[in-house]
Amino acid sequence: MTPFRGTSTQQEAIPDAAVAAAADVMRSGRLHRYNTLDGEPSVVSRLERAFADYQGARYCLACASGGYAMSLALRAAGVEPGAAVLTNGFTLAPVPGAIASVGARPVLVEITEDLVIDLDDLERKIARTGSKVLLLSNMRGHLCDMDALAAMLDAAGVVLIEDCAHTMGARWNGRLSGSFGLAGCFSTQTYKHINSGEGGLLTSDDAAFMARAIISSGSYMLYERHGAAPPRETFETIRLETPNMSGRMDNLRAAILLPQLASLDDNIDRWNERYDLIAARLSAIPGIALPQRPDAEFYVGSSIQFRLPWADAETARAFLAANGALGVELKWFGGAEPVGFTSSHHSWAYIEPQDLEQTDRILAGLFDMRIPLTFTLEDCEHIARIIAHTASQTSLDGAA
Ligand SMILES: *Cc1c(COP(=O)(O)O)cnc(C)c1O
Image (cartoon, rainbow, N blue to C red):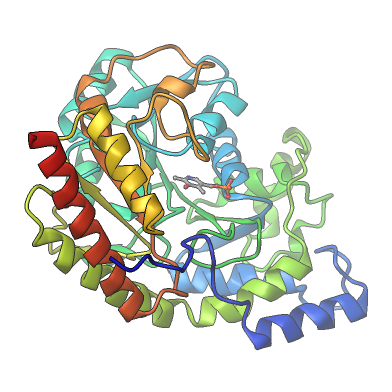
């Protein structure tokens, strides 16, 4: 078996148009979002307008990171210290971290074998804790039945905030991820769907919520210079009552993002070509289980997940090592120690320990691979052949 020589951490270059726009910002010296010439909208404001339009949202705020967007959303939604906030038992560390950053308590909800939040467990935990907020993590780009979720939350009076770090551009029944609740939180960190190194975007249709978020993000009373903000009246008392916790985006990042937003939908097609190819090959391999993706879900295949439900920890480690030796960089979510990422609730020692038997069982056999656009379709074929080979070797070794 020829080893694969590519690397899943290598993203595409920043497009020339974005490099040129960034150079323009640097030549102007006006990097701060409020450092504008008379009447000219800043680049950050233009990005906010463009992303609000893309999402079909009334308002948008660009900020420092996806994690910051989530903590801002929780604060602007009025989450108080000590409050219980529901979230997925399988997500990335910035999600429970955002809840902890406002002094609230994460209540973790089980996931299903399709890697989405378990709506039955969610219903039980809403009843048990009386929590009024769900920070839903569309982890690794998987969407739960958003219609059923919205109906349940509506009936229970629970506010929905969506973590769309892996679902920018994804849809459920034609409706964009991030538009189902009070707010959508997006990341523009290098490994997400548009890349400014670091960055976040928060969207909402709620004027008072967005006014609180804007003031909180550090707007120095310059909220009228925002690109997709509520009218000035909304800020009348909010501007005096809301503490400043600076976390603004700068013009340099916004300049890098604007041209990428214009090519997002084309890139989604390219991701899905690669995802669908790998998924087709993996689903033909005995012993490998792929999460079911319902017809209502339009996903963005920027990463792929699969399970070896039969593998114990030793087998999983052997499978991981065999792939690594052939150049295929997989992540395994069942390890006892967090390696390079922290998606196991057992490694969040700052929260109350929680019993998530179903989630733990699923994570024990769960593998993940990023699909950067630097992979060609031939690369994807090659990777799938390696995984097929290592899976058969591992199961043979296991049986012997
Ligand atoms: C990356 C990520 C975020 C946000 O990350 P930042 O690095 O703070 O931009 C949020 N949720 C998930 C699931 C992520 O993977």
